[in-house]
Amino acid sequence: MGPVADRSSVELDEMAWNFLGSEFTQGIYADWPLDRRLDVYLRHHQLGGMVDDGAAYGSLLDRVMTNIGAAHRVGILSHGTDVRRRRLESEMTQTEPGEDVIRNAVMLACRAPSLHNTQPWRWTFDGARLHLFADRMRVVLSTDSTGREVLLSCGAVLDHLRVAMAAAGWDATVERIPDPHDPDHVAALRFTPMSIVTDAQRERADAILARRTDRLPFDAPPEWPSMEVRLRLAAIPYHVMTDIVLDRDRPILAEASRLTGHLRSADPSYQSELDWWTSPFALTDGIPQMSLVSDSEAGRVDVARTFPSAGPTDRRPDISVDRSKIIVLSTTHEDARCDVLRCGEALSAVLLECTLAGLATCTLTHMTEVAPSRDIIRQLMGQTGSPQLLIRIGIAPSGQPQVPATPRRPLTEVLEFRE
Image (cartoon, rainbow, N blue to C red):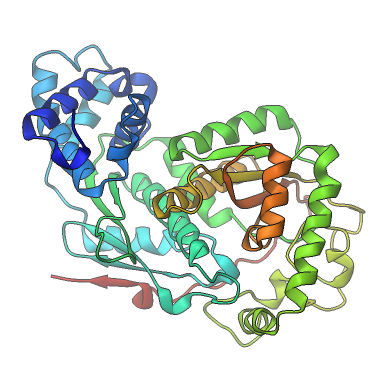
């Protein structure tokens, strides 16, 4: 077949039928949204270029949805469970979620993490599709000069939105980077009613509210080998690489973290931005004082961004040194926009998986902002991809006050309804 842009309707129909008859519509993938199953199918058949071509991918997804009913009638889908058939068939319906559903889901999704809690996103609902845009007015220029971390943040809020909508009974299909003429238009979502909502889907949405960025030292996570497998599986659908920092390499990573802090300390623009976003007067964004750590607490965490001190506090004194595990999420194509966006989605999936397991987390991007530190991470992992972020994972001792939730912007500032 020719390039993705040249595919005829006949070819698209053939691809749609091949997908519907594949193992990716079977019971083992029943909990995956339709577009995620289609993505994996295309990449499995060396058609990854079509995933990144918004127009071609959207056309194929339309053909899949059009042919679901016929595939069921002729028996291609009849060998699955009744629940799976009903779910696939429901994706043909034209029923759209109401404004209250969208409003509640966006409010929950906006609990997603972002650099310095800048919340660099905005949503527009046109009655049929929900559109996600990057908010360039909230770029932290000295820290994120390329806007890479804005895309990571948008990816995280996008995945949170899908989780929130699933808990409300709506499956989401996503077109990433849908408009080549508008780089800030990062995703467009359509929704179809689901036949059932599982307890697991509700629990994952609840985890959004329970998740925190915890900058204090951690105890070691229990049963790490099995947890590592869970986290790798959580990231697989987003086509990012997941690596674990070995204990023997931790001192090298810690030294790179210190080097990064030293370089940043000599950058007045960076320091000015950091002071702005940690101001005690911010009410709806930024990092509040209670979410920062004291010099004593920071001294027990070897891999961390350096923030202004929170004052003379000494929480978790029994943890003399941070015993967290650190994972690295990397993309294969440098900083390609769609890959970075998907890495943000993977970040969301990993954080929620950790929260469901009762683990504390802290997302780290300070080292991937500076080329020398990024190179060190790449060498430690022994791969050629581009490290996008690190996540520190461990246990926060029970019986102590929980890290407080950070503030969020009013919904009226981030969501617009259009006729």
